[in-house]
Image (cartoon, rainbow, N blue to C red):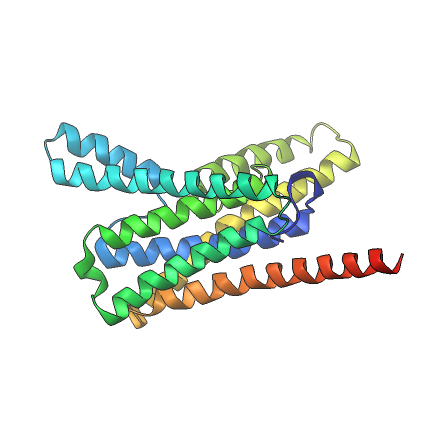
Length: 249
């Protein structure tokens, strides 16, 4: 699910990718809020908080909210630079490497929390890092799916779901071609499942962080790393098989 790109992707691949990473995004978002009171994946809220606090003269709060938005932006930019460079080199697993880097950075943050500092003692550092990682993740899934899947942008997912629901209700009065109807049902299922997985991830994040406040992010990092390594190994085995076939020919 981290190897196929845009037109080559199937509905199943998008569903698996969106669901897996939406759980991660929900868990990280909930853990960040419980840790320091900021949502690292909610850029709509952070931008609004920046403007509101700025107008009300709350400079520190405005800087924090603006900093989180800039961290998210920086993560999306770095990820895109990596993906563009990887595609120029013909690297099929570049998206998997991006997720692997996210997992490594997340594990590093968790280790810092375990060894040196309690999460709440890090002020803006932890949520800024997590916002950066969520920017990376959202850029990865947006590019690989052709903007079909966005795992941190629940506002957009709910909007898409509302549009699809309205179109689906319209089919009861106006008949639609079978192929179009099938694609509509698939999109409905995709958006619904991603939203549900984000909610599930948020619940897991709330429970996991309350149970293991220092090490929870490490657990999430291991899950992300497993997804990435699986794709990297599959790509390597596929390349080795292709090379062996060419030599035999």
